[in-house]
Amino acid sequence: MAIDQHRYPPPTTSSIAHVGTYRRRMAVSLERMFENALDWEHLPHLHRSSFSTIECLDAGDWGWRARVRASAARGANASLIELRLDQDLHRWITRTLEGRGAGNEVWTHAFEFGPSEIEVVVDFFTPGVADENRERVGTGFIDLYQKLYDEDEWMMRLRQRRLEDAQRQLALASERLPVGSLAELVPTLPRCVDFNGRRLRLAEVNGEIHVFDTLCPHALGPLDTAPIVQGIVECPWHGHRFDIVTSRCVSRDKPGLSDGQLRLRPAPSVEIDHERTVWLVDERAAR
Ligand code: FES
Ligand SMILES: [Fe+2]
Image 1 (cartoon, helix red, strand yellow):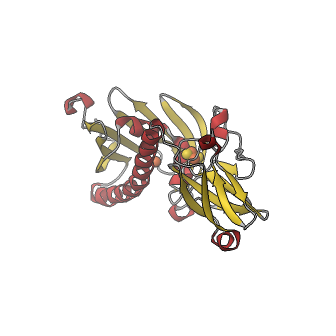
Image 2: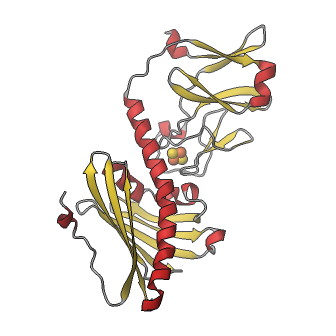
């Protein structure tokens, strides 16, 4: 789409001062970017250094409205935020409706340079800022958005790669994989093992070794370095928590999620032979 069709730059009014612009070129598709804009749930997890909580009041294809609290490092201030996405215009506008920063608007336009190449142009507007303070206020926004987009780009690129991987038929090369002697393995847990094209993670829970697939079933987030506490692994992207032993999602109610998104993906089983060697056994390969 040509740039002028995006109606860029955004309109300015005398009551809302334009304080700065942030631009970023990213190797991600527009689809991933729209998905990210609508994804309110990741704020206090992927962006945990910037946000501490979010309570969604309404959400849909149009955008979302939510009560958001900043992280302690950013003052823990609460605000009511609304994001409205216009896919035709490749644009979303985030407005602070109440609380800290009320009246702020952030206009983001996405420009496509190929199937997996976009540039976002983010304009910041703040009411009541004196001319001499605009640059300082704008720099604060730009620094924050630089960090947020570092985190978002990591998530979008990894998710894209994993979606592409999922479409390929991974060959089942072998049925069994030795992962070491029990005595040597246990002190190294939790640890990841690659087997038949999948990244699996072994962990000890209540004296037993369990294995799980490190692709989060919610949106393919990474569980390979996610914290494990008392047999529960927590995904860094949206904070869903899974019981490694039962594979079940144990976090708060997740309305709208399918059964498949509420269970860790099926993983090989763990066997210990008479010589105390630990094996992973992929039953799909045995068929
Ligand atoms: S990808 Fe959403 S919680 Fe894991
Ligand atoms: Fe984000």
